[in-house]
Length: 349
Length: 285
Image (tube, rainbow over all chains, first blue to last red; front, side, top):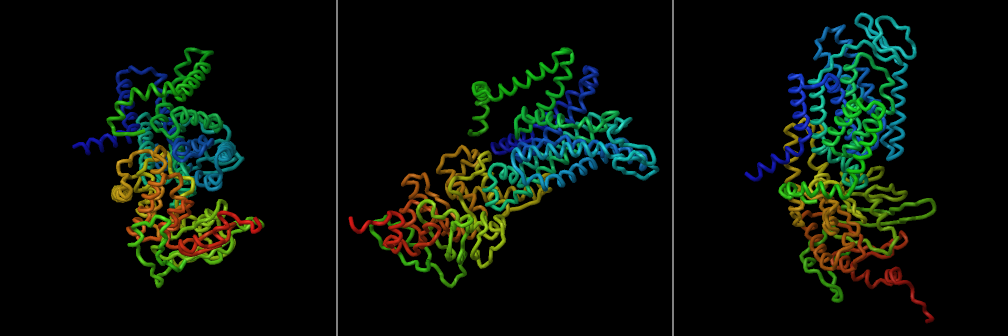
């Protein structure tokens, strides 16, 4: 009896982010059906889902694998543009229904970003710390600049690719720096929720498995991990590519949520924004990433009422969170509240 | 270190478990054979012409003054450094060109002088990482929670608990390893190395920072590990009670060169060893 309740508590603790997200989804759905949600907030639901996916996937690289990556928006952009192209292609050529278009866009977007993750990861993961951060930053910018030059058009049922040359036959889908325009917005809140759930399950299951432990072992002590026979480069790459794959899926959903999208949307600033979510949510803390991404995405939009002081208020909130989470006295206070529960759970610090 | 005759020194504490230790079978294939092993850093010979043979289930000691190159020998054996000279054979297989991971698969496991645990992970997870290659299942079955995952996790849990029971540490399984007391960290590191089911366990200063009572317990444990797991153990140690008490063969290193090899008796009476540790006596004073 006691053992089964312990197991249940353990499962609840492990999958807490999934439960949280499901609860939020149900609340949002109720608000939508009862018309209690303002239109502006409603339009933010899909981007919030996307940024949760981005933050959780970046946390896999930064928190679990311990490698600071500044090029996450690069993978997002690959997912976004390949997702839009695939959605258009499957609609025009195979006549896929909207959910099927969305699914194929997400899968292909993820795979494309994953492949890019392998290509970038192999040389980059030899580096450590600051150097890795600088090189991932550079690769993020390289991806954006390459996308600036790519033209893709659909001619009948053939896709044409061109590099730095807009003279290609058929209707152009991707037009270099102009990006994609008049995209059919097929992303839905339900799809966003399912993607968040998928991402959380992949990341949580990975962390609580043999491979996840190996990834964390490499983070904690590379030399010791090698000494027990763990393939250090292999597991770093696994974390990096999984992270890129999930970012690609998030990007695909993002791309299909807007009528137009340019490569400039995925600049260095976008990468930093995601990193801010991860850092403020707590490095390695999945629940924290989910909450931080949701709150910090909605906050500046809701602050529009403050007009000129909007970004000032946003910055103050960021600084306040930083100070509070690092203040020993406040931490001790919060711990004292949760102490009772922790003692019951049989945990020791 | 071919001679394993029992020591009869009354000055040191005779360890009770020694009498029951197995005799070394010289017909068995040695678990480790180093011949002319060496590494140069530019002109500096950190280790030079190191020859050593360790039989299965032998406890060997590697001693020497600070900076003699003892840890470098461990690093050469486990392929952290690639030797510039010589051959290392583990269980009859040449390790030339191998990396640390392959050496670990061959059956070499080690602990570190400055403890290297996975500090942010629990005690049990630390051991599970040691079991990484022993009880494997694929990443995909881990993410998809396939039957292989549940089976592997169950096996890992059972094996980890079995190992923890060796040091009576079962109730610490959920504690973060970084918050363990020093002695327990040392023991956990040994368990993690044992989890890789090695043929030769390399212990780098296992008694460092332990009090005499803990050291005494450690001696019992090392012998217990050898007897239970039937593995060879090689240890670097500065605590002479421990080295002289349990090592069947001792090798003394100074400035990267072996200056003496033999049993505890032979080492204690070797003038070169005394000189290395205490310095030369001036004749005319």
